[in-house]
Image (cartoon, rainbow, N blue to C red; front, top):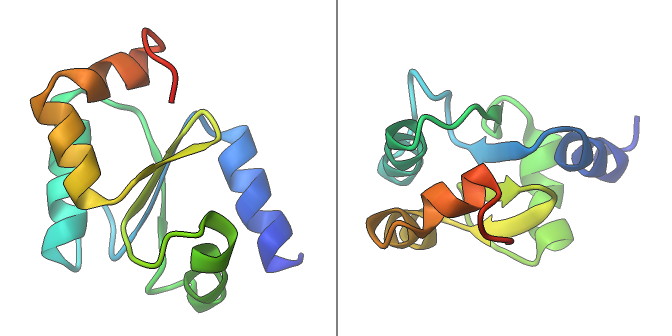
Length: 105
């Protein structure tokens, strides 16, 4: 399968997708860890992709999303952003609204 098709399919088929370094239980960078902590605090159910074990996705996702760094969080098909944005949204109470559908991305 073409990598861009795989990325589009992952984002389309899953309400919350986190492209991160490592896994939620074993994040491999502080930014991924902080993002997972914010999502867990919201009790979010998420699909994740470990970009360290998926080098094709790691190489292609920044061009697809127009976002150069990881992690990258998508909610209902829309890029929310990286760690700083996710943590800021969480601290403002907005991440919970995005995840529940009370707010649109």
